[in-house]
Length: 191
Image (cartoon, rainbow, N blue to C red; front, side):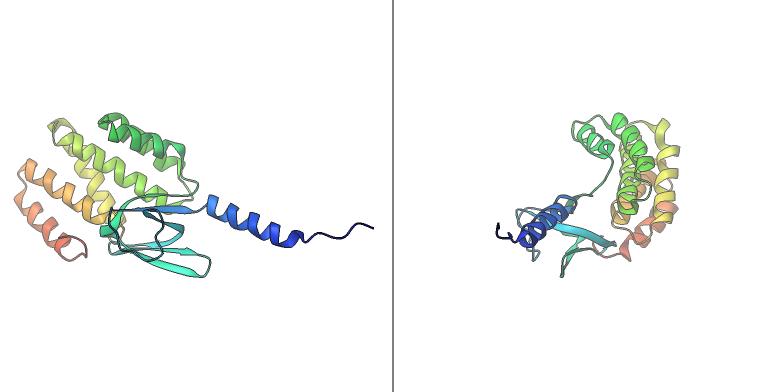
């Protein structure tokens, strides 16, 4: 008779590795002092996002990451289009990036944090384009205003307000700029 092998520990190890494979990766700024960070990132499941922090859990460990220390977040299950869009944005192809972010927002249905990130990056890319092409100004302003209204406490609200204020300044709407800056001043991480 052949002795039984203990498969239970092996199964637990495989499940643990599988959990890591489907984890969100919060990439940190160089020199970050966030606890539980390894290799410049915090890995786990994003539980919540706010203008102040992103809360990540991995097993029994919960880590609060200040938004000021986040470079980006790679969400588990995010559409591949998000990666393409970020690549095009890095390459300076903002119009293409904006289109890809818009597509990614539709593909991220059911993944609220990834969808919110895609919507922000779509609006922000159009905002960057509008800074050089006034014809894009109305669309960019509308998208950024809608984003800020939809996600007033979201992780991207401060950079969205920043881009919005720059576009309002470009438009010459100084009353709107004052209102936007006053709104931004109420939020943590807006300095």
